[in-house]
Length: 256
Picture 1 (tube, rainbow, N blue to C red):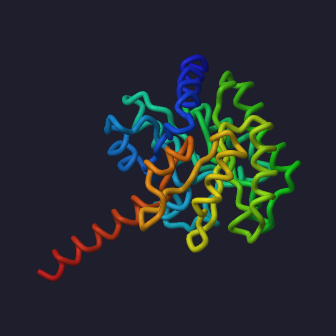
Picture 2 (cartoon, rainbow, N blue to C red; picture 1 turned 90 degrees about the vertical axis):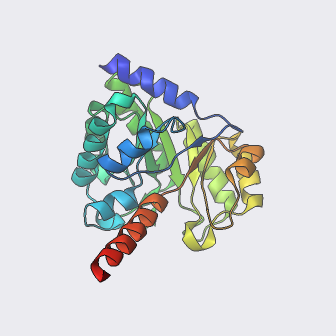
C-alpha cells in the first residue's frame, strides 16, 4: 500500500512544473470530488478547508482535525477509482496533533497537504524556524509511513497579515529548503497578490509558487503560466457558485 501511495505522491510532485501549472478546482465533499475527478483535465484533486468547514456546518477557524480528516477519508474513498492524487488543506496542522493528523491522512491515501504558517489558535504567524520545523515534521511522518515523496504546499500568510514581500521571500525560501514542493502566497480576498509580486516571487522561488486564481479580473491561467507559476488553485469558489445556483433553483421551485 505504501509503495502504491508513494508512486502516486511522486507523480503528483512531478506535476508541479513552472510555466505548466497544475490547476486545482478545489472541492469539499465526496460528491464535488467525484464530479471533478471524473474530468480528464483534472490531473489531481485538492480540498479547500473553508469549503470543507462550510459543508460541515462550521467556519474555517472552527474546523477541527477530526472533521477535516473525516472529510478527507470520504473524499479519498469516493475518488479512488480514478487513481488521481489527493491533497488536503490541513490548515496549520492543528498544533501538537500534526503527526497524528498526517498519519491519518497518509493511511487514507492522501499524498499532499497545504500547511499554513499562521497559528490559528494564537492568531500569530509561526516564527520561520517553527514553520520550517513543522514542514520537516510532516515530511518525516509521511516518510516513516513509506511516502517520502509526500507533497507540502507551504502557505505563507505574511501579506494578508500586513507584512512585507521581503519577509514572504525569506520565509518561502526557508520553506522550500525544508522540503516544501511549492509555496502558496495568499494576499487575502481584498489585497490579493499583484502581477509584479507574482513575477518577483517566481524569480525568488524558481517558479515553485502557488497562486490563488482570481476569476474577477485577476491574472489568467495563461498569464500565470507565462510568468512561470507552478500551481494554481481557486479555494472555495466552486462551492460558493454551487450554493448560489442551488439557492436560486430552490427559490424558483418554491415560488412556483
